[in-house]
Amino acid sequence: MISFHHRIYTRAAKLSLAAIARVAACVLVCLLACSCAQHKLPEESALAITHVTLIDGTGAAPQPDMTVLLVRDRIAAITSSDAAADLPRHATIVDGRGKFLIPGLADMHVHLTGAGEPDGSRKFMIPLLLENGITSVRDMGGYLDSLLPLRREIEEGKRLGPRIYLAGPYLDGNPPAFQPALVVTNGAQASQDVHDLVRRGVDFIKVQSHLSRDVYFQIAAACKGEHISFVGHVPDRVTAAEASAVGQKSIEHLTCVLRACSANEPKLMREQFLAAAGKEKDVSSRTRQFDWAQELLQSFSEARAHALLQEFVANGTSQTPTLILLQEDSYRRGNLADMPDQRVKYVPRAVFDRWKKVALQDALAAQARDYPLRQELMEKSAHVVGEMQVAGVKILAGTDTAAPFVYPGFSLHDELALLVHAGLTPMQALQSATSRAAEFMGKSATQGTIEKGKVADLVLLDADPLADIQNTSRIRAVVVRGRLLDRAALDEMLSSVEKFAAAN
Ligand SMILES: [Zn+2]
Image (cartoon, rainbow, N blue to C red; front, top):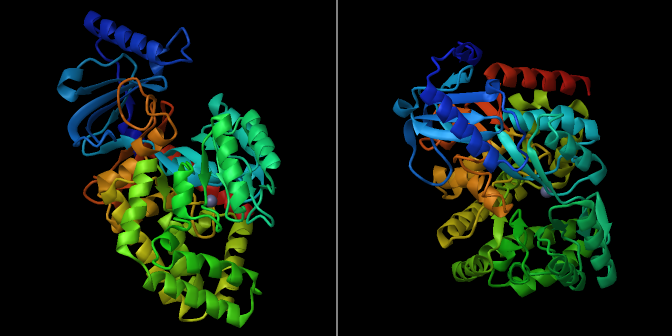
């Protein structure tokens, strides 16, 4: 196999006056577009990807034989390859013949500190995300003391990594579902916690499943007062329609969505708390959970689903289905031995041991009949996601990595395939991880598509992702903030993660 490395060469281009003028113009545009512009742009920072098929993320048809010129961390020019005869002298040229260029990907639901110690994310998750073409992440709950310095290191260029948008700790009821959490039990606390988090620099507030109704609505009001959005789980005691109406900006994992599509929603909601009050290992309680889930499926109403999706559209509520997480829950845990996964070698042993423990506990508690039911729940969820796309609900690609068996980086490609399985076109799936994600974060002026003046976050693929969405994982190179990571560099990152994983 020929390494991509060998296909990159520095071109000592003939430098005409016209070319100098063009370069100067590009540089000027770049300076104007770049708020953090510095005064001198060394030419060696120019990178041109030539003769490539461009899938720019706007939804436009692919454009064959294009040349994309990057200067520093910005897209300086996009032209057809015939018109781009003169490229900056000393520009690094990447021959994109037969390849496809897409915007850098965003995983809109990660937990960078979810796999353990802060250094773990630097040596394990961050390189795996980059290697998989992920140049932005939305961290949906984690330790600010680790995340803020990590984000700073990346922003200041001291470390290569994705752009990080973050929530910090969850706001949850008592007991909280996960750590790190701030337990909120009254309105005054809700205002104080939201205020404190805003001051610490979070981008949004994350709400969790165990919040009481009153406190949830108080958090919603506090967020409105602080002009910050809130996202997360729909708490068990709130309906999906209520969360949408009160302005929750995104709903994760379709929490409470299937319940809201049931003709028996109020009954199922009441019964949920009876089951929760039962003992975890109590057989009658597990039987009740099974019956509950079966009723959820049997009482599914297309009419109610349709009405709910209209609410989501009207209120601008986005959805991050994390189908990969639902799939892992449904299909894999019972038969861990049957699922040798090539990617295991990239997961630190201590992390993988925790994953196995979760799988084992689940397998011990589960009954044979649970698995087909879970698969049915997964398929019903996928069905609703397909209906969401048709109704015009905005769908975001997210994974919940590093939840058990949700492999950092790789899992986003699995999620894109599942979104296509649910009914999205490959283009729509791609947009859920590019332009949609940027729009959601309020960053479409600079990110999410391949357009002149935008940041140079790009992924070069060996095969057409619109022909087969699985091709998003056939990565030839990644560009993050204008910095090229060719296949050799990506392989190097993978092998260093493998070494780290073996020793930890
Ligand atoms: Zn999560």
